[in-house]
Image (cartoon, rainbow, N blue to C red; front, side):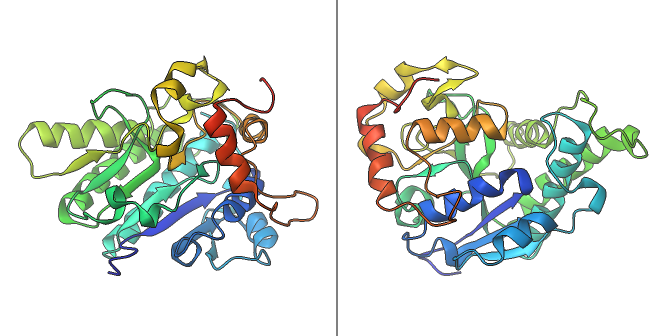
Length: 296
């Protein structure tokens, strides 16, 4: 209920992302109210690694079953089951009346989001987020990597629908032990976007707002991903306006880390576990130059 931080930050990660979590904690360590409002939900191995890390963030062990703990290949059954678990956890937080922001540890924060009026000043919207697909005026496909969610009756209704659809989709695999197999699933984000748009088109009172793609770009801003190098995206967006850059549109934790390091967007010494000095200034500099330190 604090007007300066009217939502908490929620991040659920596995051991494969723990180095990126450390980097993100270093990235945001001097940003007021960020760590104190962060809830990190981690698997058992990640908890052991992070419990002594220097942060005010609240770190809790996930209720994820032992057989699902660890890192899973994108689109594998294990991957989809862990994303289902995140849907359940987020639903419980929302049902407790807590506004939240879903965030990911691979993003680079150039500014403190609690100082941004487009995220903090107006809490009337049910959903506020970055578009994972559109760079035009259309809302497109809101991604779960950076999504502000208001606890409200209409949101509860949407979230229950998403939980139900995901459960139905994975029901045929309920007793399947082959967690590494790649399966064809639509996933929670597709069901979410389809349903809120359907309700909105039917005249339901639901408020959704897309953040500026120049202030909160998706991973197409970078090079070296699925889109190779979308230099036109960077050229169209003044670097001074950047707040948070997502690191999606690329598959694999190792590739994500490599890209962050190439852009000087890596904030932790992996040998000492210490935050790199003055790294935020360096990260902003590569954004201003619109060039990485090295090509993909």
